[in-house]
Image (cartoon, rainbow, N blue to C red; front, top):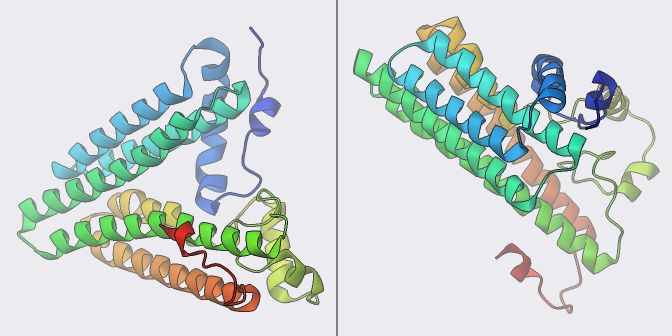
Length: 272
């Protein structure tokens, strides 16, 4: 069996990722991946299931008002969720079912933890705001992960009609709705220089994504204490919603700029 090095593991990192993952998760996940790859037979799907189990433990901790324990276990759950992808890329053992399991497992973990957090704080304080908080977190997360693939499908439909080759998703932020042609024609600007700076550090240009939202609600706020749950979750939720609205606006501009003529067949079926 091949022995992997830490450099091999580093090669499995995404070229661009969330800043929370790049700075606070990958440094740990890469070092955990190395012994897992070299000394165990754990599969990516097995790691995904283990991550989901940890997510359930985190939810139980939140429900019993063990905020610090819940935050630590949630972090471990997300870290293991990063390890499974690295193992899949390192050994070439990823499967389509594994992609589905990973995606659904993430959603289940968030719903469980949101419910646990809401239940635990409501049982302790009888403050209905915590019930609203749990519901809002679950809804925002589901909206984010339903909206993103739909926007991608819209972009792909427009590019298909125009006969334009899809740019490399590793090199161009998949949530950036500006076409490659438009980007190359524009003069250098602060935003482009900033994006290049982020790219050199493997950080995606959309700085407030679902991952940062989860980190704020389930790690940072619980570690800060019960007083921080509502204000930090509300702030993170507003920032995430603003980011999503901005991305929808960018997508709308993209479709307006590159929309297909009305005489051509409708592409609405792509969104079904």
